[in-house]
Length: 289
Length: 326
Image (cartoon, rainbow over all chains, first blue to last red; front, side, top):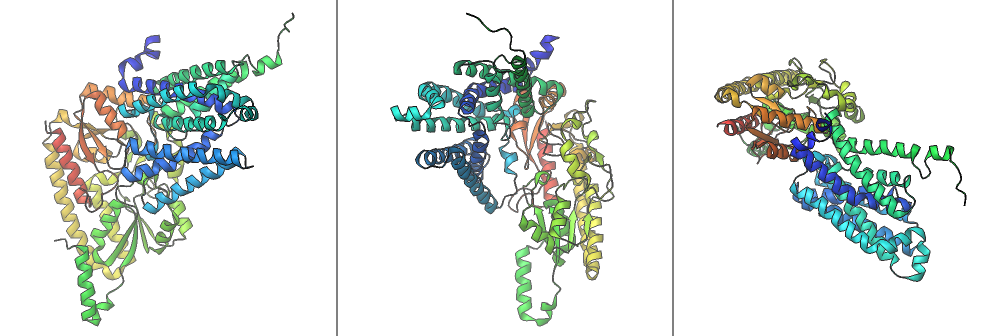
């Protein structure tokens, strides 16, 4: 019974195993990135970047058709250019990061839509680019795994300056020149993980697997390491439970994964030990020395 | 029999220079068809008396078409608008309104016996259709001029040649109403084209009847072949429903795979308008072979394998017959 419910879907069907590996690899890379986005108050940057990437992927599609490489490369280039320009403008002028990012992603989006329309195809690009976690083939799985690996390696490399930047960017700027490169590397990682997310969950929900687990983690741990660990576990569990939901209830797989994560978020919001609502209402005994 | 268009135009141009009388030949009637297959029917019936334009071009997906301002301008220029109906063109009503078009709208599928979406899922008894197509049901409801069951009808009626005959009849009547002077030409063209459709229907039935009964079930990418199944007895299963807008659920895909394994479906077909990745995965997981590309909802460009309806149906017939031969 329990076996039928929880394990049999993956034992019987290769596409379910692939989907599980896909969302797990995705969570390993995207969830830590989401935590840092949240701590830097950039939670909505993911959405903006998703729009910035789309035109690049669309141009890649127009140039060489349904090619994983072209679409991914196009998306990466567009996303990194937008991120770099926005980051540079924010650091060199008085314009804030959110404003400069908004201008550049909208420019990128408008350019993409214009190019696509002038090419005169009727194909709905969202649909073409909309990946499904149920249709992950070998190249796509490899791409997601490589992206997750690169993400974790680079994160390990820039971890200290990145954490310091989250806490006090002015201090980092005053003691070392590592701030700007760290920030740009981080934005590049955001782009890389969004591209992975597109392939697994589609354009609309890619940001979900990044931000929801991060918000969940915030209610369970106080230090960054703890939040990252909780977020990653929450991401993986959401992926697993979402696939099961899609399998047993016949729900489309992408929304199922994100809805499960949303359910965990609401539970954490209520019962999380760090700032959860129930804990705020009933704070328990004060510790005494 | 078919004279290339460019030759006709060249000949007409030459003639008009030679004799002033030929210049009085009436302007062709501008007709807008909603997608490529209807445009082909209009061209066959209207011949040189009509100038056919289409909204959703070759190799494009009418389920998810988003009209642009230029499309509204083209619609406004048309004197007759030909649509499929049966909930196929969910975007059409708003486009007609915004274009301010007063041209008569012909529903080419009028008189066709519509299949319900439910019947397209002739396996299993569950209701997974209802789970995730609520949103586009709403879109489809109001354009269902044909007056069939709203929302849940399968619009791909042209996949049966018998229905194509009904389409052609409706288009002929509409063209005569819009351009009474051309009655004789339209009726002659229609007689000629119906003859070709009859020959096509015979070919389809004969060729596909030769496939052994136990091999007559295949997989495609979306449920576009319900009428084809009814007419020619090849059973189609697909992970996505009659509209490509839906996203597959793990349960749908798993049921399909389990079914292919059980019944040993010999082939999986791709379609020109749909994402091939899901069908490829299913083929790989079940060991069924990829039988080729079928053309369901759109014709190809002139240099493709299916530039006209007749070519499309013959191409599908050959592809299926080859893949299922043994």
